[in-house]
Length: 239
Image 1: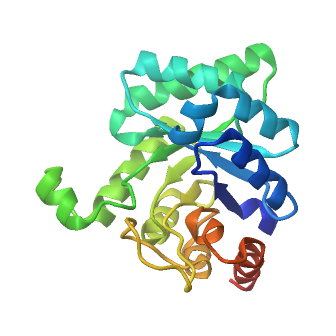
Image 2: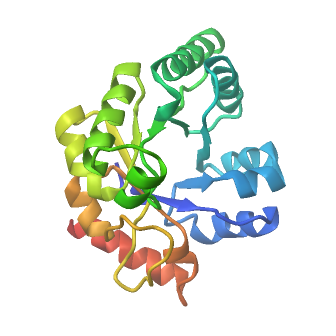
């Protein structure tokens, strides 16, 4: 995997035109772009089609979490849109994940489509131990719960998980080399604190075992975004 494929640029914007401008701006440095709820709700499937037509890949970050039938049907639609990867909440349960994966595999075999990578969301990077225990009622440590959720995703046949880089090493050790680890919460040294609590630098995340690094504000809010992505890519190379 090349360096340009390891960084997923988060298009956390609401304007279609601006999103396309960003893809054009970073096309020589980034291969995969994340589309979340804000951009997808404002722009619809057109944004996916148009970015795909530019030869780039899409990570559809809608975090499906519903009954198995609804999630599997949503996954089929996402697959038909030609996304490179999408995600579901592991807390939706084993049946939901399995039905989702089976529906996607069946569709791809039937219609000769490229199968997207299906990733399970473990614990959001905005969640601290205090929130996990006192608000969500989960008595285990974050590391223990992430390990458990990752095991469920692996058992369900998912391709990997979305997790804070702080849990990347334990996931890699527990789930093996072929299991993908996609990490948000990546913060270069120049980035000020924000709502993400469990963070690491790009170099630290790669060394911990991350395959992909999701980055948005750290790049887009830098005075020189292209320089920022060049520094990040160099840091990944030296990891």
